[in-house]
Image 1 (cartoon, rainbow, N blue to C red):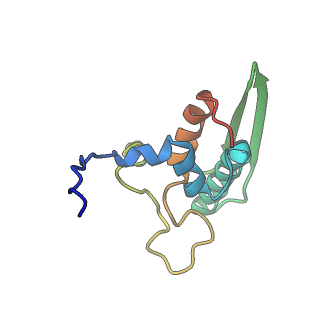
Image 2: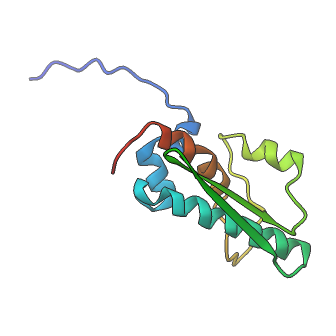
Length: 131
């Protein structure tokens, strides 16, 4: 008979899933090599949502610049912006933040994790993981 193993329990903070390569790939459904496209898609989705919520036809501006080995993206829209309380909620990595999660058929943003992945991806990319 084998001797019982002495396993050590450990905790992993929920925020780790937004800063770890494997977890980000699971959250986004995309390989790390596509994270740039993921960020752009999510920023545009959020801009469309903001315009839809404001009841205006979307006007979205996208800017980009290659700086050393990084790509800098900027997306702006004519929506109402994001309130300070929502920003605080987004930055709480123990929760999900969505204004669509409780509705029957949202078209975008139902999971409430996109902004968190957008925040985590640049930190992941600096660590130079490869697929």
